[in-house]
Structure formats: C-alpha cells, structure tokens
Image (cartoon, rainbow, N blue to C red; front, side, top):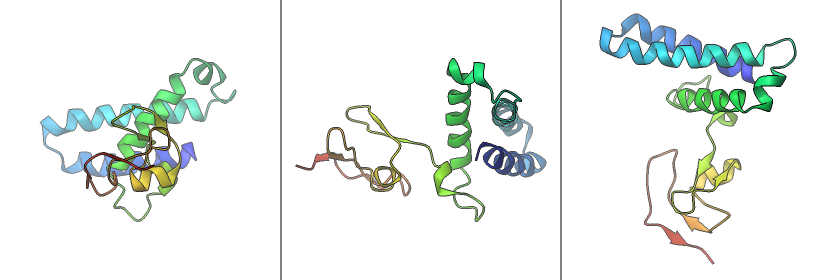
Amino acid sequence: MSAELAEFVEKRVRLQLEKADPAAAAALLAEYAIVTAYRRVADDDDGGAYEWAYGYATGLGLAARAIAARFAHHPGYREEWRPPFTCPLCLRTSYNPHDRQQGYCGACHAVTGTPATGHRHSAERVM
C-alpha cells in the first residue's frame, strides 16, 4: 500500500507544482519531500526495519496519508489511505474506518461529526 500511496501523492503534487505560484510551491515541495522520504523507507531492502522500530516510518506514513487526504475527491484515491480519526474530546485515535466516517469515538462514545464532510455535530455522548 505504501508504494501506491506515495506514487499517487507524488503525481498529484507534481501536477499542482506545474501550476503553482512561488509562494505555494514551497509548501508543495515540502509535501513532496515527505512523501518521497516515505517511499524510500517503505521501499528499503530491509523493509525500513530501523525506521519502523523508532517511529520514523510511522510518522512519515501518517503525514503522507494526511497529504493524500487533500486529494480524496480524486477517483484514484483509496479509502484505506484516509488518516486515522482522533477524537477531539478524549484525544484517542481510532483506525476503524467506520469511526472515521461517522466521527464516532469508541473510547468515550462521543459523536463529533463526519470528518469526511467537515460537518460537526455538537459533541454528544452516546450511551
């Protein structure tokens, strides 16, 4: 999955770079550097064992997913690339795609909205 994610984002960012003004280009180049670093770790011969052991690859992967989420409207975007859901109330993170879609926290049982659409309910607990 990591190689496909990196390839998808690199292509989208390159296309944006062609049209970007100089101010926006710096941010796009930073995104490109993050995704390229993630690709190198994921494609490493030893599977990036050192980088995974010390959290470097995990951090790059989460950053790459966050960057890819900007392109969620694109037909080539995969739902499994969507970043994890972090509850704004208890700050626990869920990797369950249903929690992400519903904005539901299984830890504190809060319904915080639908992150995919940006719609937010007032935080309410479901008992």
